Length: 309
Image (cartoon, rainbow, N blue to C red; front, side):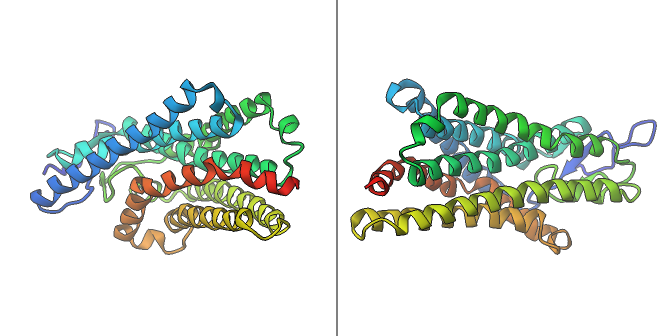
């Protein structure tokens, strides 16, 4: 495998080497097959959801419009790093250009910010459907839904714009080997020729604000939902509501737990191998997000009927 340090005339790095999973060839081929299947299943599953919502007029409601956008977001998320990871598994060079690396960084973290924003928008929709069922049709209009969708997409790219610009100013003039399968923030900053405390602080602040604000908003929304569910008379509707809320909290705990381990935990940068596998779990664990779609997809209307009574 060619892991030579490639520099241009000015001394700055023109490409990076993504080590990925430096195991024996047999294991790498096995990983390639497994990850390829997971990737294809993810694309097929999310595409089917988008097509179902697009083709059925009955599903042109805010809840399913948000769900379809979330499915498209999932396709974008896995496509931001998995194809390059698969290519590098079977490649001998395992390289990525300087520009490609920064674009991957920007797109990856923009998609992750969009996940937090869309999950917040979906929790807002659930809150209105369960806690304000009589006002839901007048509040959650198609116009408001369209504004939420546009805000989530535009806001995600704007949120990561400043960190991305700062990353273009980080000097890379020495080693170009990244011990990861994509251009993650920590491994990139570790290759800087000189300390960049302002860039590090800005990136950490932006990521922490996005993670904690969306997490606290979602947690607050489902706390109010749980309070409303407790007002429902005991019975099958209440039991289903409790089951739904428990599933929500499990999904959000997995989602934000893995994110916080990757980018908020104080010791995350001191164990790059552990962080690599946590990131892999976060990127490839589509069963968790498929469960989210199933959980968010059906119960709201039934529970809201009970809260009306």
